[in-house]
Length: 341
Ligand code: SF4
Image (cartoon, rainbow, N blue to C red):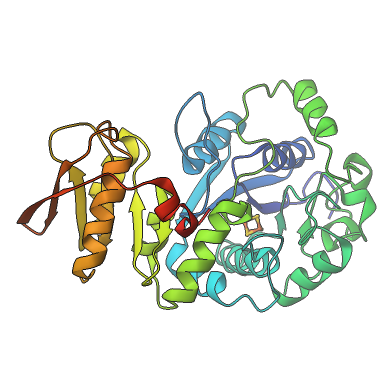
C-alpha cells in the first residue's frame, strides 16, 4: 500500500483546555492526524478563565471548536474519589496524587481509544514540567500501569523521549515534533503566537489538589471523615474552614457568592446568619452541641457588618426549624487557631 492510499492515523487527545494540550492537538493536526479530544471533568479543576468566568469544561469546548475537533467530556469525580483517598503512588507537594491521577486518566483514554478504534493517545505533557508526573521514570511507570506502552505521543517533547509505536511505524513524523522541556512556559507561549492561538486560559494548568491551602482542608476532611464523598469535597472549595476544639467543623462564607454556594450546597447542615445585617452564611453539623452552637453563632457575628456591636441576633435554621439566639461577636484570638488554612 502506498502513502496516498494509507488511512490517516487516528488519535485520542487528552484535552484539559489549557495551552499545552491545545498545542499538542494543533501539532497533530498539522501532521495529518485525525484527532478526537477527550476531557475528564472533576470537581477539583480550577482552570477558570478570569475573563469568561467559566470553568474547565467550557475551555475544552472552546478549544475543540477553535481547532475543529470532536470533543467528548466525562465527569469522572465519583470514580476519582478513591484515588484521592488512597493513592498507590503517593502525593506531590500538596494532596495531589499526580501519578495515580495520570494512570486513571490514561486507562480511561485507552478504553475510549479501543472503543473508537483509534491508533494512539496524544497528550500535552512536557518533560520535566511537573515534578511528580512528568519526569522520565514517572512517564514510563504511567504508561506501563495504564498498559499503553509505546502508544502515547507527546508532541511537545517527543524528540526527548524514546520513539512511540506510531513514530517507529512512520505514521507520524518524529522530526516535526518538538523538544520542549522544563517549567518555563515561554516556548509554548511563543509557539501559540506563531500558530495564531492568542486566547488561552490557564497556561499553567489548574488543579486544586496542588493548592496548599485546599490540600490542608482536604487532609483535615479525610482525617476526620474517611468516608467523605462528593458533597463534602465540593464544600472544600468555598469559605473559611474551622475545626473547633471539640472536633466540630464549620464553614463561614467570605462574600455573597460564597454565601449563595454554601446555602445551595449546605442541605443537611445547620446554617447561621446574622438576623438584621449583612454577614456570612455559616454551615455546621446538625448534631453540634449547645456550647458549640453559641460559639459558632459568635464566630458568624464576628464576620458580619455588626462586629463592633456588643450583642447580635443570630438566626439559625435547618430544614424549616428556625431559632434565634443573641451572642457577642467572638474575638479573633478565641478561634483563629482553629482555622484550617
Ligand atoms: S495536577 Fe491534578 S489533574 Fe494534574 S495530574 Fe496532578 S492530580 Fe491530576
